[in-house]
Length: 573
Image 1 (tube, rainbow, N blue to C red):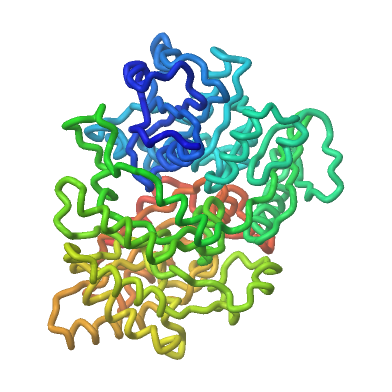
Image 2 (cartoon, one colour):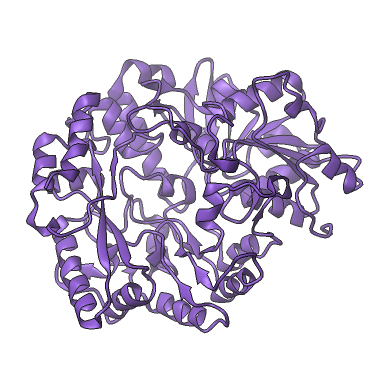
């Protein structure tokens, strides 16, 4: 029986106020603590709380002083949990040009320097030194996407699984509700290590040689150091199985042992998804931050997440590697309940900033024949061409929008998340009878003056390496967009996102982008230089100069000055 919901404590005084004589799990995180379902620490804390566990959080501990923040709550009854926050700490700290950022959106008042580089490793090493007998479980984006040998852009080298450097006992990858609950119960019941090592969606470091017969064995970390081709081969295997519904165990030798990565849980059901969101979130920053602004919270405080996963399969993106390829949607009733709850929040004026997810218009989408999906190994359901088994109807999403608009007190429900226009457009036109109504409603009812989309580039040779559709599709979108806006009499702009310096992109390709006639009169502010982040196809290309799928050579621009010149093409008229 779970205890009555309480605000998750972050200090000794708060623990004492609750009358606790022990804490089950103590979280250490690189972010300020915000009790909102957009933040993983809050989600797992509330989820474990639901099942009767006492959870406390130490946000942004000081790792430079006498380490009092790591001592103040003492030892947990079960284990320490560690994450870097909502972002990889290196992406949080540095620009694509490897310059130190001057602010941190996840820290009160946007102050920089509140977390270390490689935060998960730093926090874990401190905890293992102070409390060598207490298990440490790592998770979140930084740990999840560094679970195997990976290229680290900031050190410009291959690094082994984060389990090796950090010394953590267990790694929970992906979306962690189910594996974290099962792992917590296993540790509590003092289950045999051999049984714990069978829990899905966890990874761990073992000594000796693995003897599992049905596992998939990768090239060792040491071999990858000597042979870039071996690293590319590894990643192709990892990516293939990461996109399967029922993947095998993966084993990667390192040193005198190996990292074992257990397969994921099946995609969460609608009922399970509802249970993850129907928790007593206050939707507010912890009271300790009274009168202090946290920029990241301002961006999401009036947003609502509708689903998880993305089957787009963009080569530079980590969403599928963390959330999975298969869409896991909440019920309309759960979403509406959350929206009704927004009306109780301070300063809510009836405007929802985002009804979305990684790709907003994938809500409710799935393969028509699930048996085919269970056997599928495709990275993307949309590239190089849309899967014929994929149901791309926007009917359920339009129905959801209708229900949201009928909620009393809701003035506007904007879509701030990205959309995939290849879900409703193809080379022949609109995909089905729901496509045009969806685009029209999106533009006229759910866009606050600008519709942001991501063609990423104009040249097919680069788009192929990004796993993105032809730019011709964007041109078709612009025509439809202009027609809808003109007939409505409203003012609205189409804002495309582009990436410079992606593998395969040189000066010639950037010049062609800048001179593309289809971009005349289009707002060109949304640009970014490619940053190789762990566990993406694009980062493997950047490091190896090879396409991991074909092992054919790929042009890569690594010169900082030339990368800077590439980005400058965006602003030339």
